[in-house]
Image (cartoon, rainbow, N blue to C red):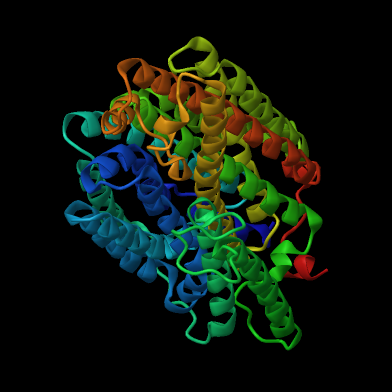
Amino acid sequence: MTESAPQTASVAVKSSWLPMISLFMAQVLMSFNVAALPISLGGMVSEFGVPPTVASTTIVMYGLAVAALVMTGAKLGQRVGWVLIFRVVIALFAASSVLMLIAPSIGWAIAGQAVAGAAAAIIVPSIVALIAENYRGAQQATAIGAIGSARAISGVTAFLIGGTLGTLVGWRPMFFIVLGIAVLVFAFSFTLRGDRGDPGIRIDLVASLLIGAAIVLLTLGFNNLNGWGAIEATEAAPFDILGLSPAPLFIVAGVVLGQGFFLWTRRRIAEGRVPLIDLSILRSSKERAAVYAMFIVVALEACVNFTIPLYIQIVQGRTPFDTSIAMMPFNLTVFITATLVVRFYKRYPPRVIGVFGFLLTTGALVWLSFVVNNNWETLPTILGLVVFGIGQGALVTLVFNVLVTSAPSSLAGDVGSLRGTTQNLASAVGTAVAGALLVSLLGLSVGRAVVEHPELPPALVAQVDLDSVNFVSNDDLRVVLDRTDATPAQVDAAVAVNEEARLSTLRLGLLVLAGISALAILPASRLPRYKPEEIPDPSPVAASD
């Protein structure tokens, strides 16, 4: 009894939910910013006069910066102190929103998201570290669920508010809201318990360079597969190697550098030196399975969040408000599921929830590929988005919880950096691959449709550059065809071809995503079987055993 009393008092002190206000809002800040970007695509395309794939680079750049810097950011937080550096990077995030507000070109907007990503690279592990420090057991699972729900509710509010503002005012006011949230987070950060950090921690610069370069090369490679060429270099490629595109070469080089990072880190651990990330958090196949599952589910979410706004705003030429309404079933369902899925942890082990979650996302994507049409407000489409949202919300919270509960609190920063690297690399790669996949499929669909429509003579087709096919609205296509000698009947036929090709591209793209989701059932089947009361002790001794 006398030995358990101090522990009870400690738990009572740490049970206050007051620190969660700042942590919850910090997650809202990052997620709101990310959710605002797809809504802003149409506005940036129109204002800056760039293709949608170029405007989507803002999304890719944010994820790239977080993924490349989050491991270094975690060590920096441990060295300086989580609360102090948390306040500094929140101020930096506020500065990034100012850059978005004054951006005179797409380059400034991309730079603004690079700054936001650099700040988020430290915010992400700091949230995990502070949760692990303040909460244990059921409270910890609830806190993690709250962070998951913060991501989802941010998506709901960002799409709703952003859609309204984007339709009535423009895309920039969204970032006034981001700035306001940053100010509130900074104010509430003074409720967090301070820590002095550990000046003795040394940052492994070699590992930082290896993982940073690997992620940059991987993201650039995937993001430019379409523009630079998947195999042969196109005219848009900055250079070529014996006629080959640099995009796949960047991907290969990124994989090699990533392997170099792991080899270097294992060598450093064997020498008894402090690594950039403690690989013991990935020692078990169950933890590795959680990382694989997290990468796939976040990549799928990024694909959906890119594809639907692209199709509604760019293809159909509808307003951002229409986009927010179309995305509402998905985002609202993710929010509710991420909040409530914690209740199922007492009944079902992570493996069961994980496999069931990926079965839901796979089935929903297959369903959408058959029922989707030019009207997103149909009941079958809404049903598909709801089912996909249920699987998505359950999976994001689940795999995060598996990683946190399997590691001692002293490694919470490492878990946070791993989560940040995985989620943001997956988001960047998912967005990039979605763009490259859809544009490539569209090119094939248009080429086949032109051949199948004899009313479009070769002389007319030759006046349109089919080598740079991209998603355009019917009105934009008519403007292009007005510059040719096409007759009104031929213009109508070309518009019909465009509509047919775009819809078949969307359906085929959703089927490809369903296939990826189905493959994710394999790592999900290797998640832990334990229930919360059976969770092993993640103390340093148990971890070393």
